[in-house]
Image (cartoon, rainbow, N blue to C red; front, top):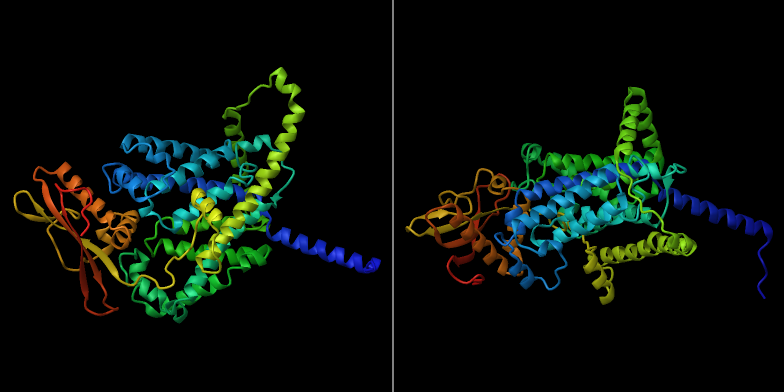
Length: 517
């Protein structure tokens, strides 16, 4: 029979377990002010994203665009999207406005949990409506919203805070663990992908990326030929990715400084690379890593310059004017109150513990499968696909894009003349002075690159059909036939252009909807 441990040994073991638990809890704790800043940032980014998408609402989300509902339902087996109820522009515009209102409710913290749930549902629905234009930033924003559902986002700097007693300054839960791990997984999985390519490990990755001038903007165009500087940046970024687990290991000021290194790199991307909102979405995710010492410092600074009191008074005015929505209890409800309370407690445990654990496990499984560490069982894959939590984080990995790509679309008009109906100009086979200028925005660049290389060739017909319809709707002389060419400049830095052309599709505007070669 095994002997019991001596009292001193049990005491030391208990103390060691307690210290380990406290150490883990400390690393997964999030300051309520960090969650408030996170809520405001994510809600604002949802609004900005909607505004940017609205520029191409007809092209990307209606039956007059590149993916009409007929094509969506034909090419994608499962379409769970409110945005797929109608292909009319007014319906999409209405859904955009509704999503914007709920995102605004998130920003001010009014009925925050409901606003977060609806914002996530509408964003996921929007993504399903046109998968061809999605990027890593979209997935990241969707996941931040998803984990926000389980976080107490409304306890600080919000209208909802009037319903909460401020008896805590930090929160530690499965949800805080999940959102911190989610952000960390982006860097860890991307680092694994990058280590599987020689370009990143040799320090030449950013040199190649900055030669693809359809990606570079502003400062990026200036330093594109500063190869030594770009190699230094490559090594710095790769080092940060490999050390990214320190985001969780470190605490206090050291965590704040290390987090700021990532924030600084992402802010630098904004003025160098045309990659949409991804840098700002990443910064929003990193806000939850800033510890209480940072928020204490910012609070003291705001108090010293006199804006803290103004902000508090402004928030009190907003809280006073915001409607209080409550349902009075009927006599029957009062009698059933004890039973309802018990159900509510069980529901709270389910919602705050069991459900986040389940989805965190699925997210970790999805990321592990993305780097071939495991396989996802079919039941788990069904849940992952349905809830849109699949992720792989292959940004510029394992081999980054290094060639400039653009389109030329020579088209025959009814009067026998030829023009480029995509660029609304004469046909020009030369390399454009700015490849980036051939794309209306980052969404169009993503769509066209996917259209060129997507396994489903039907998208090329959808694109050509859209060009026919767009031209004929705005010109008296209609277009009869379009030919879509993908152009690629494979020249190395400082070399003369080495342009190759690929005929993607010849399309008869009066013919069948789908005309694959």
